[in-house]
Image: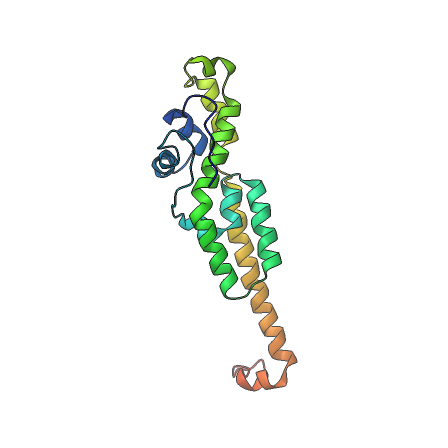
Length: 181
């Protein structure tokens, strides 16, 4: 496993809290594990939202490149039974680390030049910029729920049409008795 030495001082708790946004208390201890030895190293962790939401979690956390990779691999690998399970486990194990790498890079890019020489990094303008660059996309849960509802409606429509098109299915699901038959 390759590691790298951070280019400047470690990330301040205020910076991480501003960048992460919601659930910062959950991610900060996990991020500290990755830099425990003074260098950045991968350590196993488990992230349920990354495992089950996949591309949507990456989009929610503004990790657009990884969302594209997740979507492309999901399409390329197909939808067999075991591949999505294995891919979900891989996302769950690496999700926190990938998010840490992005947070680390974005925070260091957003730091003023004076902060690399020991100046305080907790000024309000810097934290506001981190909050704007990081955080979460509030639209992602709404779009994901709307997409699931749309898929359910399409499945109902498809099954109803399929029932009318295939004669043996009409016998399995007869029309309910009533005056409109």
